[in-house]
Image (tube, rainbow, N blue to C red; front, side):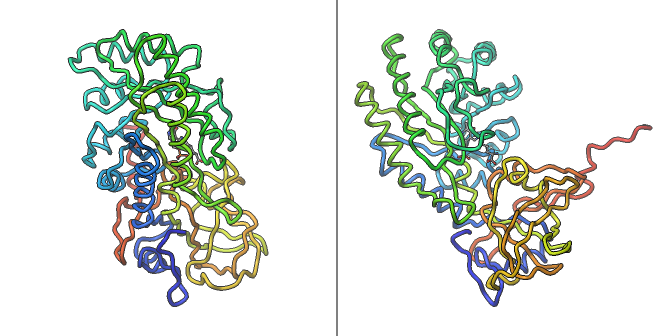
Length: 427
Ligand code: LLP
């Protein structure tokens, strides 16, 4: 739950706001984002790395976890950078007034149009994923007089201990240059006058708790950097071991320890640089989930029940596909009676026409009645950002709560929005 969670007069409050009143005002499903928790995580990251790492460091929020212009404005205000993976995410960064040198463009299949926008707007780095992309980038930058910064993403051949769908570091993953291709990529980058090689990047996966593989990733990056120095005579100015720090969704999972993460990453980087006699590079980290997940709360209206075991709600897999896609589990309470003791163990079924649309399995709740309000915790990351209009249901609104004030930062989709691209046959 967000830091500001409390129970007032038998109702769940977040950010100084009564969630029951917010659900009435904005409708359901409704996503809340707690400003204090969100900014707290951003500050914790910046401070932890500033303290732990003796060289320069920058924290880039990974926008794929959740992105809209207001959130990007908060990223800018808090002094973070932003990782984007599409032309429209890049446009959001621009609308928010983020300095473009604090923006990195990622992706394994960037289009020419996306690369062109990133080049024209002078993003700090394009994170090159493969040799074909590098070739296109050389062509697309050939007119430049000041070179475009480039990080080379490698597949470090490290298996992260997480769900297979969100492990990205194996040698055969779709992401990143295989280690055999790295020398060729460095040679091409250094030979291109329109490119400036900044360094190396790797991201091994998401929802990580064990940090051994993160340490191993840092060591691989430094070893590769030393090899490049020896062969090409240039040392990297920047290294990024990606994002991936896990968050607890249920009581059995460990707490997120940003301070420890920063210490472990920094210590590994310092030790490896010393071993290989490399100057300390700028350290970039790219957390998404561990910045935004905890700040988010999803509110659903209970539509009805079926027998003893099913509670039906007005949202589900189209606003949060994680249970269906990864078997993800969440914690929840009834926002209109959060202190009532559990009285039943139920499955909470989403409203979408698919058997896999079960938001919560075997969850203990007080006696649930139609019109109760279900609040799901840790709902900020990879929910709305992965939402769809399955069954042509409009997507929920997003409200930022702070100090008793609720600000709509993404309005609810309307039926007209959903049908805006829908064209009649006889025109
Ligand atoms: N950097 C890169 C290059 C990434 O691919 C990702 C996430 C991140 C940073 C941020 O990772 P985080 O700190 O959020 O773990 N939809 C999945 C997660 C996919 C993660 C994709 N890449 C889920 O809901 O669990």
